Image (cartoon, rainbow, N blue to C red):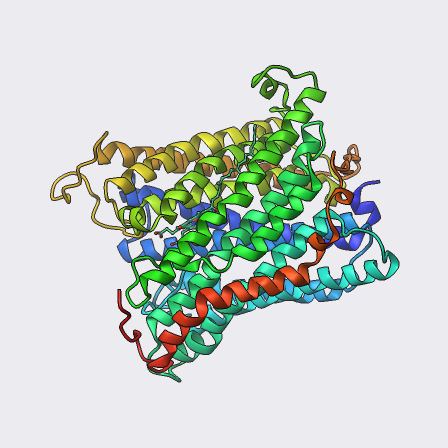
Length: 565
Ligand code: HAS
Ligand code: CU
């Protein structure tokens, strides 16, 4: 039975979340194209923006994609995951609608202030503050209120995952918590723990400051609160992709998940270690003692473990699937995978690209080598492989598989869908490789000027290649990404507009059990209360003293007393 027939209310909720997310994706993606061309100086004269508006486009791109698209997709996807794996409807769908509306209102408020950058004469404020929005850049209060409503909305949606589980538990007192629900919980526990930081930043400091109620804020404190949230948020994006790679991808490959217990261990490790690492974004910030940065670095390297375990488990599961399909040889089995199936190829390619993104993450994380790449275009190179592909392309794969199940309609334009993930990967390879290389040559991130080539250009001297050639690759790569995005949206809109009567399709939405099931692991693994308590202790160890230092000289006073270095 298709999901929509069994759970019509939940299917509708997923559709709405995905729908809003895809609108954000369309606008944010268009901004991406504009910005790639403007920044690299290609076709600049055709673009209707000036240098100041480059930052409007950049803010819109970052906020709509990294914050809005992600949050809507995750909340919707998890509605499906919880409902499917508990095999029961949500206990309080109205709560989820409430959260959804809060997120839509928040997004609208923030979007209006950002978009007003295109017509600053209009009275809707401004918000050229980029997606990290830290002081001293200041936005209109509506931007911060919007951001807060987006986050609070996701909290409300998340509450119903837990309430639904409680109802399920009452009926199933002895059963192990199903893997997908466990993964959703681990993700949300981490999300509640970490997004509290940005909530404090926004509500206690940024809103009062932008309203003029307080005259100044402490930039170091607000940055620290931001990055306390800003690292775990990347796992808020990654873990839904992992949920898909662990539970959907092996099935699409014709196999089974290799190990359910190992998957649980991975998610527990993320709960424990995702938050006490935020200082790895602040290695160059003065006012934080090197020792605390060192602790964050050590934790970050331990945090590689769950991803390396994931690489092992997911690839083993895919190999199992490929061998079931007749694949053989050491790597020859790769050919037996269903590369023509867009849901599979999107997710598998996203995984392969993430392997490269993970390696650039390891370089970022080294305290000494970070100084080489910090604030260069290397960093956008890194995060387009991670959130921009591991998350975004995986969610496109999820959509190819799930949208027929939540609409009851057959996927349209299948040929376009089949080529779309490959176009994405080619575009991303060109763009992100050139960004990494540009970063090594010292090209800064987040700047509209200068062009770094031609007359009067700053003297950048890359070891291999030229700045112009890198800029060209970024422009071509960005354009291919936009083409790929347009293909994806055409498939989605085409499917949405098609008639359900025309071959109402029953996609096989079942998920086979793992080769090694949950019974092979101790029950303590499921006890998220214990893991959450340990996570809180680790947060206190990592953040207690540094925060005390920042607050000791007065909550609003900039800076912190000197630390012996
Ligand atoms: Fe990062 C900056 C370190 C992962 C996103 N990161 C950023 C920023 C973003 C971001 C958005 O330490 C910029 C923030 C800003 O605007 O300033 N990052 C890491 C590390 C990891 C990491 C150590 N990042 C992510 C993920 C992101 C993300 C995930 C989003 C989703 N990152 C940093 C640091 C900075 C940073 C510093 C600050 C830089 C600076 O100076 O500003 C690790 O979690 C990575 C571990 C991953 C692996 C890869 C394992 C491979 C797998 C693939 C399996 C293959 C499959 C396919 C499934 C070790 C799991 C199989 C298919 C077949 C066909 C076989
Ligand atoms: Cu990080």
